[in-house]
Length: 167
Image 1 (tube, one colour):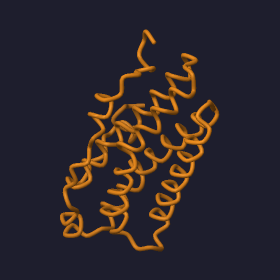
Image 2 (image 1 turned 30 degrees about the horizontal axis):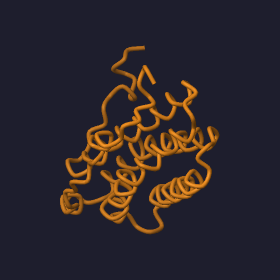
Image 3 (image 1 turned 60 degrees about the vertical axis):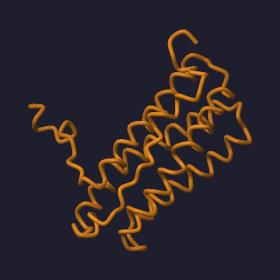
Image 4 (image 1 turned 120 degrees about the vertical axis):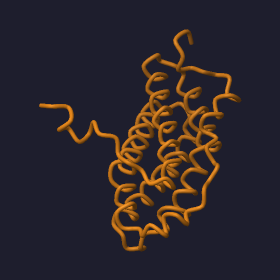
């Protein structure tokens, strides 16, 4: 098969107002990778959980709020994809609270990383494309530019880089 025939290898063209949300997803997927690295290296799950909670409070919570306020709000309340995205956000919030109360659980970390990865893939492959298709151009252009993106700075203040080689 020719790689050009494989639609998964073709980057999805994002509307300019959605690009920042997609960029932030990169850091969410990096969080998933870090969790997996920590588990693979048998890092104490409390160390991993502490980082997950830190990242959630300093990045993901605001990212979710921006998505809900600025993107999902452009869809009707009965839109099945909007409903799914909001439900997944609630599942992630709930799982974060569980992790907050049970920091020594590899299974919770595995569950969280799987859910976050699945959710990001859903938004990137399905929801964002749907928003670009059904939301009028004027409405897309009226999405306020958000300057959240703490993602690339979150690790600057975190000293326990358990996912690195020599930890």
